[in-house]
Image (tube, rainbow, N blue to C red):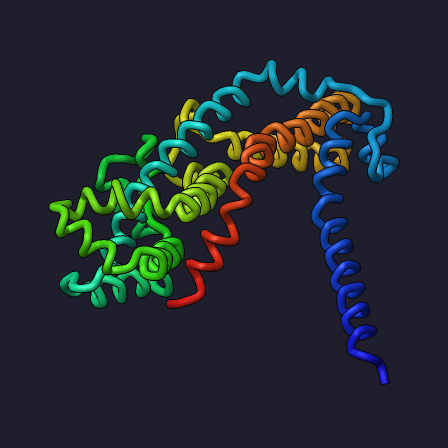
Amino acid sequence: MISDTAQDKLFLLGNRIFILVLVVVVLYPLVYIVSASISNPQLVNSGQVVLLPKEITFEGYQRVFQNRDIWVGYRNTVFYTVAGTFINLLLTLPCAYALSRKGVPAKNVAMALFVFTMFFNGGLIPTYLLVRDLDILNTVWAILLPNAVAVWNLIVSRTFFQMNFPSELEEASQIDGASHFVIFFRVALPLSLPLVAVMGLFYAVGHWNQYFNAMIYLSDRNLFPLQVFLREILVLQEMMTQMMMDGVDEKTLAEQAKVADIIKYAVMVVSALPLLLVYPFIQRFFVKGILIGSLKG
């Protein structure tokens, strides 16, 4: 028989091995993309770059920063992320707070309607027609307004308010003459900073990575987010590869494919870098903001 102490040690060893494997699986693609972005693209395509960069060159980053479309996409993505996250929080948090309070009329009906939309929706074509009829097609509002409230985030936020903002504190504030708006903005919200940080990060990541809505609702290239331009680069590379296989002007296409390879990995790094820099400052809020907010439905 294995003693309890030995079982604990084996369990801890197994956990450490599992976590180590998980870290390697997560970090390797990131390290590879960074290495590929500063390596000779011919060595990358031939599979000689496995982990560390070879024949270091920063031509990809130079071309990225010289490309007007990249700067336009970066500007638009930053705007969509900041403005979209602000709108998301402005709608989600007050709604979640109201649904968490006792005595709110028909709050269960409202919550049922929100949950219903998680499982059933009109689909792409009715949504497109709605955006068109609202006359926001090919505008920034076509990116900011659809999906302004994520129901799952609403449920987590409501549960957080239920567990961390007791009704006694609300009643005490009302006795002091505070209105519902004052209670929310000056009492409930300051006590919910972990939730605000987590919800903000969730929404911001969604806005930063989204490209599908832009492809559907936008035709003006000056409004395209960065991810759409990145997709164009990836599609262009695939087209060039196919044309090279068909034997069409191989020398010219090979040079263009090399440029596309250089830009592709550099844009990946540039597009992911801001969120990677922000995440460590918000990570400490995750345990309190998510685990507490998801313990009770």
